[in-house]
Length: 211
Image (tube, rainbow, N blue to C red; front, side, top):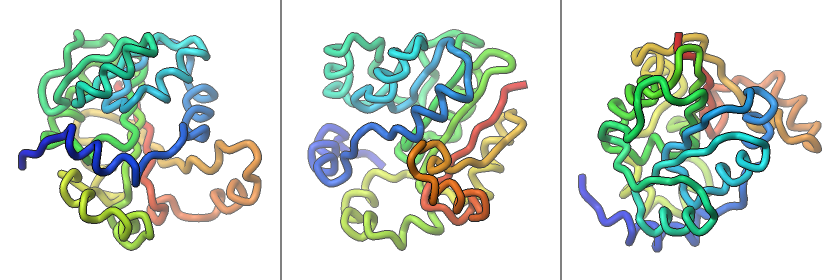
């Protein structure tokens, strides 16, 4: 499938844009030591900008020249790159690789997962977040935006499939998480998170390690 990604962004972004998700920032900052981090499909660099403030050495890739320009205005080291292809970084370069809401947009998502493994150092960590196919398609957000989501989602995963695909690329120690646990003021959600199965959440959120 081919599409004009610049045109898609201009169409979908007003419907989908949301502020920086502090739950993910808290998760990364509290769970991982400072080092080199790659955000695959980094968008406008909101997450990278926040992590930079916490001392991380930040890199990013995105398949939109418009977003690359915006990231560079913020002083972020972001490259224009199709994540289906070999990443423009050497093997074993990063301590942490992030894919928040991007894997579903990559035509060659399997190759992208393999490249995430390659560019990580031994003992480095991967974090992947993506809509849960078995839940997300029933949501109000999907009903409001399905005309463009169907255009840009090359692959949607359920809990077990995403776990299996990550493990196939050589990762181990997979853990499922919920971002709600990392919102300091959302105690009710934190209590719910302790009992609610992760496979039923609207967004899949996995961490894994490169042995």
